[in-house]
Image 1 (spheres, chains in turn brown, cyan):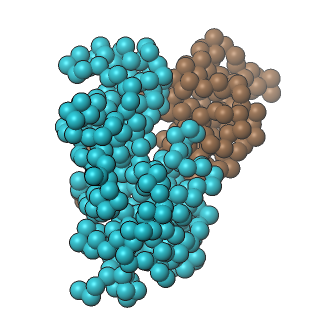
Image 2 (tube, helix red, strand yellow):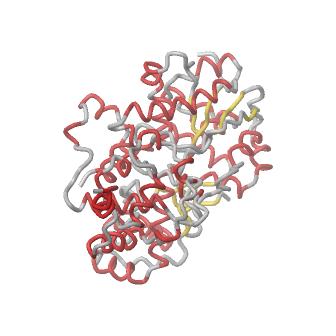
Length: 139
Length: 301
């Protein structure tokens, strides 16, 4: 049973290897550089809202696992680049988050829908907030 | 003879952040810089396309950069520098410029999809932020122009994200920036350092995750209040919205927070330069005018 579970979790099939390659291609980052120091997670101002810490997202992608695609983390990230300046390995984690978001957005998944925003709020929000939000989170 | 430079306003500078634009134009003029608005400018895209294969989101910023080259060739500006005020515009335009210059393939694809525009050479265009320009002009010149030193005003600078990050793009050291501090001192005011001066305010998450933006902004505001700052100063219309405009909502969640006015750095400059008609303080929320009158930096209404 235990073996079954581990097999399920650590499959290294062609599909998962191509997932990792896809993320590396879209983000332009070498995911293998990460040695799990956790500097990104400790510096992230939004980690409290995340279901997967940024460093865990990187680890899962290293293993070829696509779980981060269904996480809240990739949508909570505000691309503030705090992780990017902290990473001692020079990985732009914000771009990895973007790559994961892009995979979902290109599957027509939208995390924010314009009609879900309160009309009252819509009128008071500055353009800069709306455009950046929808550019990042809407397919 | 003043220096004439191309200037990119961006969307919010014409609406919610009109006070930022008014005070920036007047302050720059007082320092001998004439900011010439880019003709036919369009949205910069607000956020940079981080996905490496994304060419589409380069079109809007690159079109603006082409306008800079056109403005230069018309002889209306000195040089091909593009001055920005908004942090997001600065970041997006700067990154688009770098992305085009460093990647020949991207340049080729862009030419294909932008066939009605002249190709972007990108030789001389340089995107800069007004703070950089003022630093270049020199703190001494700023000091000399001050007619009403902001003596006794305690100012907490807040940098936000995109002026300092990512690596290689920041206008100052990402871990220990001092450009705001130097400016505040040059205007005669007192600096209040806050540990979260470069932590995210919640950015665009303010649209659909209001409580998250409120919590992040609250931590920044509380540090400023605890440091006994009179005002916070910043350079980004989105930070201003989150830290200023949203204070009412933040107080709903954290009733212990005291209101603290949030001013664009250009408004502080305009105040210290005696350009009282070009500060636009009536647009700030919370209203900083009672405090500034009490401290003697504004005439009685």
